[in-house]
Length: 114
Length: 112
Image 1 (cartoon, each protein chain N blue to C red):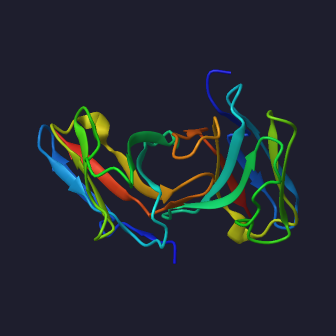
Image 2 (image 1 turned 180 degrees about the horizontal axis):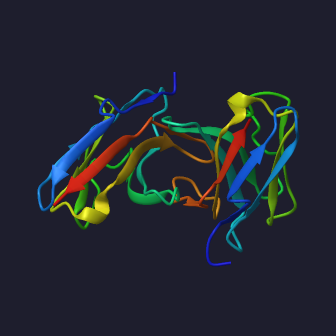
């Protein structure tokens, strides 16, 4: 596609429910990133996929968070048993996987946990 | 620590004037990259400018330039001839491959 696409744009859920966020990267981009942006904060790294290598999951805040990526295409970020502190914008980015390069970001998913 | 600090939560500037946004960082690495990203209300982060730490020459992109002081671990962004469309949140970031560390951002407002 022309850019990184994320869905849904907004998601409202009840505390304790599971949610799944989707990211479609730019075609041909081997690297894919998930970041979380809480209100008034910078971006927190969550997870990084690079080709067929094992993902860097060092930023996932708890075992309620998991992410998958099929090959070099779509990725899903799953949050189980959501908590109010999970409310944030979840941003996905992709790139060609080269050091120091520009990341292409999606418009994010605004998650609100009531 | 791998922190990036932006000490100015908000800045404002009149159209056509020049403004400088500050950023400092902490790292033990010798080779890394520094970035300024812009985030308008649409939420989509857009790269403004990039600097490679091993290059002494400051990066420039049209009206945007940086003042990179490696020893001081400082990386400020200068916007010349500010335009209304520059109004956005600006984030400083540092990293190499994969993981980027972001500051908390500076909300820049350009007024007519």
